[in-house]
Length: 310
Length: 310
Image (cartoon, rainbow over all chains, first blue to last red):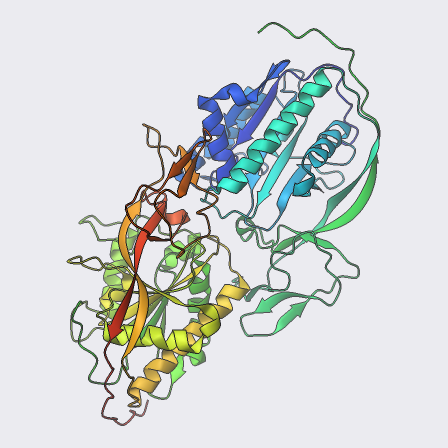
């Protein structure tokens, strides 16, 4: 997706997916609400489609039933492989002309990530303009942009089934808990994202800008015993400090035996997803990100096309 | 347990149970740590036994495998029924002379409960003195006492297998997350509780005192659709306000449709366990408690008995 072209036509097929992880409650309940009351998702030039991405996991209030929907599929056939095929049928097929134009994929984290906008790369010009719009519309939220794609890596994110997409990652919220403040914030962000797509469809051009973004640079696991069990956890001085600079020599873990583990990297990084519940099983205590500034070129305006009568 | 007599002999058989709910991580990892390094649990007159109460659920990082260990057992045979029988064998049998003298049962909540000490009733004189000791030793924690037993109700709490016991309920901590601050706080509380038992065993008497405690008075469910789904969630003005007075007419829920639901009770209550993840399936958005003051009589000193050689 590194050189993803900007759209030449209005985006008419837009989806909002919640419950890709069934215990991330803001998206689960927004999707369920919109399936009953889709009016919120209508704009003059399109209506976004709400999708409860993993209904079995949402019903069980678990991240997934058999395996993570956001991971590559093995050849066997657990529930999520079947569901990924269905989503690919509904919203894709991936990399085809029939695929949806854009997906907003809704997530929560137990980490203190605030409002985080997740895109594949800064080269995704349309996604960067959407993120910038959300930042400008919500200055009080200090929306941060996290770029998850490492060079040469294929994306398995649910929104990669469509031609384009971003994720919204809001926290901190415990798994299985629906906080009203985060629910309202996610709802407002989705509304603003759909408004941006509407502006684009109406032929509004957007000037070039510079954006600060956090790009994934690596992951750090918890300290473990020789049996693989935790031997300590995130240090109180790192806990809840997502996006803040972490300098070499600063404490990152507190061992159960009492001593501190210091950060041994060579340069300052920005830790994100610090102590995210779902990442224990992935061997990730936090993700190391680099804070970078990118120049994003202008988004040219579409030649306005008439809005189809519904 | 309403007229539980105070112990006449030293408490020698003491257990500390963690992982009764397998995704409440402070107790899971303290139990695992103490099973490897039991020195923390030794006192001159006794050694407390660490127990990982629900090892299968802890391994899966789930509250339970088939059913909650803190609930009455049905006649069928899922994992937790078998495990409850094993715990009754190990720490009981319940209501027998062979039962353990005291159990500390370690829990976390996603609610903003701070440091909460859970006892069956204010008539449990020994437990009330232990709670009072923890309050005096940790004035900065403002430890609150919650009394969970309703009149005439049998207790199914894990610590009811023993002759006596209390629960420690620390939050807020998401399920599946181990926070260093809460881990350290729980560890210090367990140490102080064992110190109190040691003092008692050594023949120290405790004078009468008055204690403020919160006694369960009822539960309030979320607003729901006719299909039983959530129709709203805890209001931002109630969220995180555990133990604070809730007055009639104050908002308690925010509906997805936008309007507020007001509290219609007749008198001021103290909500606790507000928006606890594990209680959604129980139909509990929060527990209503009454704030009461109880007079607790003096705890008479034991006639000192010699410490047995191990």
